[in-house]
Image 1 (cartoon, rainbow, N blue to C red):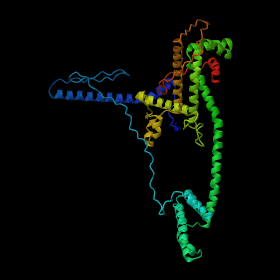
Image 2 (image 1 turned 180 degrees about the vertical axis):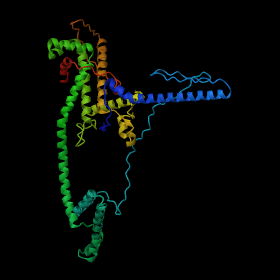
Image 3 (image 1 turned 60 degrees about the vertical axis):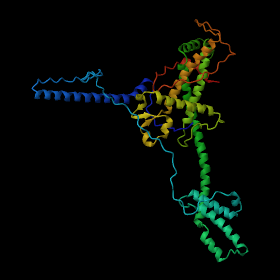
Image 4 (image 1 turned 90 degrees about the vertical axis):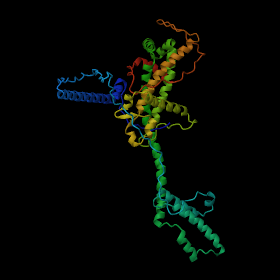
Length: 469
């Protein structure tokens, strides 16, 4: 993955039925206004037709038909369908929401710039540079540094210096034994071809180099220190958020009869022993929930760490894995697939009145990042909070499905549960461990579904032990 922006323009955040109503409010209001406009247009046309009939009757000496007042429907009462002369219903075209054509950003192309008159620098030749004298190496390095550090002022400086050094070596070789460092010809050659720096420029090079090296070293250390301080403060916050998510899922994901039995055992035996007693009756459900929720909360935690960025350094708490050698690579691939599934499923299956929110159309997070600024103003995508809300919903469904599959697997092998009061059933054979059920339920639209049930402190106290190990 990727660390998309992360960010996504925040959108209104809600949960439960209230969020669903909020998402549907704008398109519903627009559609009602459009429907009202159609009704008003039809009423005006009817009045014009009745007036024309009355005038025509007066000219022909016929009795003027009384104009029947158009009765407006009360409230949301259905409007009587109009028919034409042949008795066929008149089709009224209702306005429909139209998804605009959104434009994506083109890959950045290099902007052509005017090249300096001097020839571009050739590729570094290590063998040639080794043959240079120390003062020549220093002059070449200074030229390269100046061009890199002040490109507008010293464009082409490195190429001119390199050309001079090559021409100088050729000149000396051609002179042979007649070469005279004091000759007017040689001095004229230097005056014409040698790039020169003033004393002030030489001093600037030395001073700037020292400053750059110090700043580079300090900036790196400062950024590392800043990120460590940020991680020190933020990691505990992530842990608390994940613990709250675990508490919510542990309370709501288990079947009701299992949760009630946990409370009963906790009341009789206390939290630790109560959990063990509950496992004697509902060990399959509890162990399966532990297995599924442990992976689900671990994925949510990693998603939080990837998307939580230091505002000073822009570093996330966790870097995305880019190689299969990374221990988090498999988990990050799974998170990427979950994110794509949530966004694509909503875009393909959610009704338009849910995809249209506050005057903007839904796009996947990947599409949102690639939109042009103009098109991005017309679009919205899920926030990190909405993604996590859907991941929690998927975890609840995964627990239910896994329990059903595991019970079916064991029952196929002769296990039968017979719960009557406090009678304990026979436990399934421990040497037969079914494979982990795969697959994930389809994500529901953001803001949909029912609000989470109230947290039962007795259940979460007992199940809190499941987070260990």
